[in-house]
Amino acid sequence: MVDERAVAWLQIDNGLVLTGAGGRLDRYGLAELRRGEPVLEQAFFLEGLLPLEQPRYFVPTMELAGGVSADLHFYSDAGSVWLLLLDVTAERDATRRIQQKAYDMTLLQEKEVLLNRRLEAVNAALRETQRELEASRDLARRELERKHLELAEARTLQLALAPPPFRGVVGGRAVTVDVVLEPAKEVGGDLVDHFLIDDDLLVLLLGDVSDKGAGAALMMARTHALFRGIINRPDASSLFRAPENAARLVNRTLSASNASCMFVTLLIAAFDGTANRLTYTRAGHVPPFLRRFDGAVERLGAAGGLPLGLSEDAVYRSASVTLSPGDEVLIVTDGITEAMDPSEAQFGEDRVAEAMGGDLRRLLADVRAFEAGGVQSDDIAAVLLKISHAQGRCPAGQRPPHGKS
Amino acid sequence: MTATLQKKICMLGAFSVGKTSLVRRYVSSVFSDAYLTTVGVKIDKKAVDLDGRTVNLILWDLAGEDDVNALRLSYLRGAAGYVLVADGTRPATLDVALSLRGRVENDYGPLPFVLLLNKNDLPDQWTITEGDMIGLRNAGWWVRSSSARTGEGVEDAFIDLASRTLR
Image (cartoon, each protein chain N blue to C red):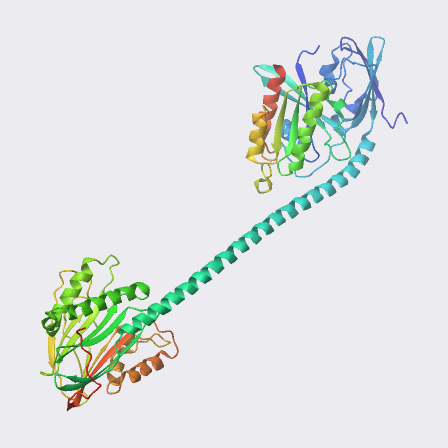
């Protein structure tokens, strides 16, 4: 038993000088102790423990040099302190093995608790985020529904700006006018209009705003309103008979307050039924198609000036062409000429020319067939003027639309 | 009397907060990821130079406190100061440190001490808030975050504590 415990002992006097030592001192790294010298310099683990304040004192399981653990038993006796060291390394190791497992388990449990807390926090945050997203989604859905309603109303109003077909007499010449207007979105930037001035002058308008959507629709409506406003002027007749003047007036107004920098390509044409003459101003627009009564197709490509809205100082010119009975004039926007098939090839001007001789429904059907179910990429608008062979008399109920209100 | 000044410094805290690792980092400049629990007390010595004077710090690395094994306050007999250690990734260990400090003060009076919030090399698991630390500092505590792995804050803590034990 004594040997298993590797007993060692130290005797220390009241002056903390080592006066004696024996037993298995080497076991505790104390083989080199010097008697007669201060003990704390040689056994630093005694720092703070001496001098002894009570007759007996016990320090359990102190790990010393070499990993050896000892129980320290202090006894006070007749002016000396006796210190007995007993090896408890084996007990310490046994305790450590048990304690280690217990601590490892406890640490795992603590980590599990922390992890669960974090997961709960993450879950709570996710639930909150989901609630916020659902609220945002509901709000966005309501907002979208409201905008759809507004846009549907806007579309109805915009389509109402397109005039109905006209079958009637202009300056003694029987003519027909058909129009089509189909925005790519709910509302669009194409404008189409026609009206009579002085019973002998039929004005055709077709425009294309440089953008699509609501902004373009407002620009379109503004342009439309400006032209319609000119009709009531005393000089309306002269302004539309020389359509470059009407274009100049509207361009000046559009350019003066055009923060969005949108512009409008425009074709304005005035047909004088008495003289059988069509005078047109082409402001950056697709040249109209003229199909003669014999089937020959010409383009009315005379340059008339910049699109409206770009420059207040823009200059506009007009050109004239004489029309004969059986002639047709077709004005389109690039939503027709640039309609695309699935391979992104364009419908093109040749196909427009080939479709002439029929009506606008046929042209539109050709465009739809060419798109082969694809999405309409641009607003579509067209005006088709046909000069009848018959000299006109206006039958009851078919009075032409007059511009003056 | 000893010719060289010696100061007994005790390491206190909950189990597995890094007390032994802090001592090893400070005394031997090493760190090991392996966790080996301390039983009883482990003694180390570190000689430091303070204002031109060599002071032996006798470091008593005490077994951590847990739910079953309370700290034997008798180990602190003759201590000149102590290092309270908490694990910054385990908030409950700060509560243990605060409790230990109260019990030590009850038995031994106001000894110099420092509080180390250890394992600051694990920022993604850190749970002690800056507000907690500010609150303790405002109460007059010397508080630092530390890492036995990187050595951050370790030497400063021991030197500061040793200096205060000399005053």
